[in-house]
Length: 67
Image (cartoon, rainbow, N blue to C red; front, top):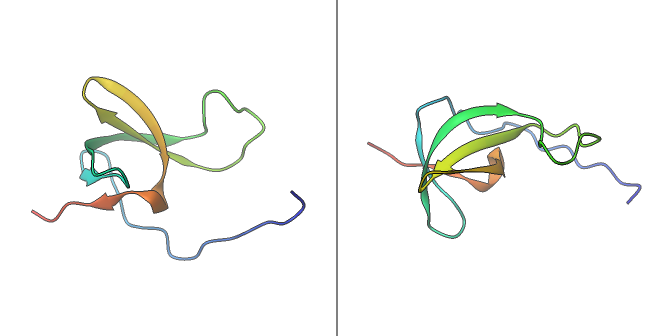
């Protein structure tokens, strides 16, 4: 892939927010950072705790649950 896509206005998420994924799973934001398995990837991921397991999602793929 030689193309670069830039997404503007990322969602305003912070640690502790309750979110839902595209698969309608609920999780809690526990941090942000690089993907642990892909060191060359410079994308920032959102770390979610879902059922006692940590997953890496792009911030654009999760929605904050309204209180």
